[in-house]
Length: 525
Image 1 (cartoon, rainbow, N blue to C red):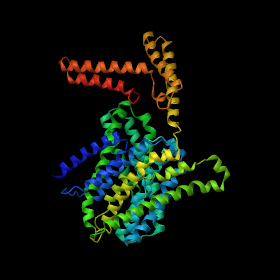
Image 2: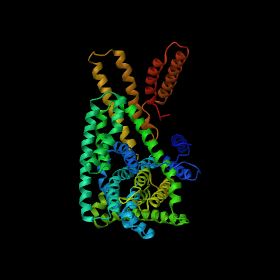
Image 3: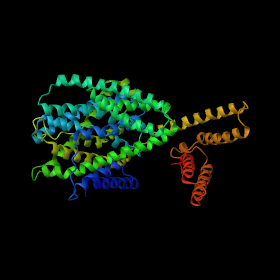
């Protein structure tokens, strides 16, 4: 089996795992982790060697960018008090604790410990999104978890670069590194804002969805490599560019562009995650073989201790940072209530994922003098074990933990969605009435649109459960009748194509319109 065939087989396996994950209601990164470990047990598979820098540069920008684009700037800004300490101080604290533990237990240089600590300290944005998207939790929890896992990559990977440089050069100055850290971060923010602004200027001047989608795929790479060329944080540049672009995109992009670009980005993110976990699975046999004989148990113990350390540090930080300020300020305690159940849930939700894998694979093979990078194979293996532990142990226990902690959904997004849809439809109906009275439109056209908007407003105005009413823009009878009519349209057009009364181009054009009409009712059955 050659490398190309192996990669194609892995992609098929990733797709099948995603189907299984959906069927059993398990987030797909969990099954990808299990599959990556299982791949390491398959004998005779070829070893794939990749340039470490290529892995870092190729995978990280497109994995971080869509998470930043879909971040709510209002919610992110409103929860900065909670997000920034988690994304900076907790990352640095976790990195320091795991670095010292790794150094003490392995005897490797402390700088190598910091390389490992920087990799394993940040929870992953994609894992957080995948694990929390189907959980019924208050919106504030989701915002904090997603915001933390988005920003913390900048902290950890800036630190990772410093730590790798310290191992390569053999020297490190805390004062100089702290100043450089600040300059790199500020520079990354500047590059990100510039790239985000440039991306919006390019997009609003185009009306060609395939070309626009290509530019959107290139945007994170432009932000990343521009930052790297200027010796600032390319990762932070990607995040800031994504947040800026996400805020401006609703005014800049056409509906056609959004309909085409969103599925493309979903596919890219999914494939890159799958490839990363398969790559680590293909690397593991070589990594395990390179370790000293009989060291498997010692490595497993090291991974368990590291996992316990990052969990304990996170719990200690969460409860300390949450309740110490409230202990000393009654006003702060009254204005910012923090139920211990929500604090405990956030503390437990710290899954590591593909970002840490990409960083681990990006560790150089050799030092400047040609000697192997100390502990590289050990770092790769322990990183995978820790990712496996956090995704499987923590990810699979979140749903029962919610029940035990009695955390319930506050339905804030549903309430806001109902309000926004109602106001939008009322404004549209008012505009229809205004146009109808101006004699610019035929009365029958006005009546047709008026009845449709009036039906939507009736559905949005009535009291209904959050699971049903907020997404039902039309009466149930209207939707069922519309589905039947659209299905009949589709069958008729396909029959005309099969009878050779029309060609396939005509079929595709009409089918596209039918699909768009049907999309209004998707997920509302």
